[in-house]
Length: 433
Image (cartoon, rainbow, N blue to C red; front, top):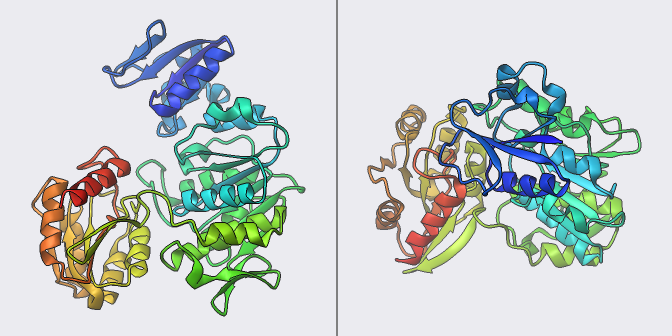
């Protein structure tokens, strides 16, 4: 078998090992001429990395490569294009697969589901967009295993199979520089449900029209959460089927937006196991993933939080609401031209607990103009280009009892490699204070 790997980052390396393990002849195709390819592996690097891909039996694409880009250069190869998720679902020996998508909260919800299943005594594997290729744990999966996959629109755009249980969290505009438009973004998410059968289950956020529309593609049983019969908040408790799981003030996850993630996870678990003790043990101890409203440290009675994963205005808005202390907000970054008027209004609504807003990145002037339009002027456009200088400037505005919150609301690519790099640089700067 002749296989082309289009894109060669971490997931590409896992794909290389997988296809080589099947005895395939593999060629790495990447636009980066400096890409380090293992010795003995054929490569096609540089501007013509997509040329003549029709000569391959299989064209594997990394998630960031839009399949339309491949097809423009190679018409007629649609049936040859595959992905890690497509291949995993094709060969996975277990049918107990749970797929989770949405704009934000995927990683947190997927992790909650996996940990709850583990607490209930199940064997669980967690992978996908969370940073673990499921091809790496495929050899350990048995028919009795549970697999939880966090799935982005990049991974879902050309999905051919749907898992037995699919979850759609809140969906708002994102990745519109990758997708043609919002309809294309929603259609990609919908592929998680499109191929379900009548015996499958679709779980969705009840209070979001996009989530409801996406789950509507499923032929299976549809269950909302944050509404009955799914898990919801009632009198300060997470409740499902008249059973109280825990109080919201017992949750270790910060912010009311995380109540949605908790309700989604509990609704999933309830379809599998009604083990309340397992659910409660996780919900009262799990404090979140790295770069998601992550407490870094306290310095001179000022708390520092890293929310670098917040690459959309809506995610940043959730973080602003979650941190109750007066705060210095660091926001801005690479501008994908998403709507931001509602972000500016949310900042205005929180003006009483915003000590200062520090605008960074190329989005700074556009966001400043929006803030001016809504009547919020308590901001500075940060001239510094390094994280230590940004943190030092933000610190100068903070008072004892305050918080400094990095919650950008924009992508990272103008100043940093990715959101992880941005968050790690923030934490490094804070840890040197």
